[in-house]
Amino acid sequence: MSLLQLFICAFMSLTLSAATFKVQSIAEQVQESEGIIIGHFLKKKSIKLESGMLATQMIFKMNKEFGLQSELFGQDEVIIHYPGGQVEDENVRIEGVPEFMSGEKVVLLIKSIDSRYWGLNLGLGTFKLINFGKETLLINTLFPSDVRVSQMRLEDFEKTIKKIKGHNLKVVDIPYEPIPELDRMPASVVEGKNRTLASKVEERENSSNMPSLSTFWLVVTFALLGGLFRFFRQHRSK
Image (tube, rainbow, N blue to C red; front, side, top):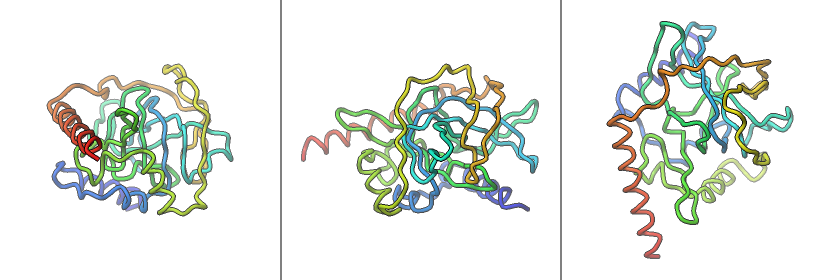
């Protein structure tokens, strides 16, 4: 069994139910990560890997990145892989894989495996950026109300990265541009740690994989609102 297969199997064993997730603090995940991306979601597609396993490629526009040195290749878009997906009649769903809306602002912790970037710890290592008053907060996609892994200010998050990874960590600020037409896949993107560039990523939308309103997301939404309310109340009391 290859390293990638072991990695995916470990993910599947961790995500049989939300209760089995081992909660790691943001600092612990930063320590484990090999790269960090701040940007927004563009598109996704499912592929079959060389091993025969299914994976979903998610394409992100980067506004800032830590550790990837994408400026060496003039890239501002990146492919991040997550296990599972749908290719023709084959469908594998992995609980804990995050869902995004086009243009949604995110923070991703990533790891390189077999020359591809993978989202670290599925949704546990994935955050959505929410503007709350004058603050920008990281909200975890799995545990939005758990202050151990959520509700951190973006400013404090970047300070945590530099403290853990060192002040010599390469940080690349990419000038913000309007979101490109969403019917286009990037002509070339940063795909893996070895800087393999995709010559062209053919798009085939999987409409059945689009986010849908469910009881789970209603629970997450209410938990998020409750957590933000508590944060605001504590902030006002200081």
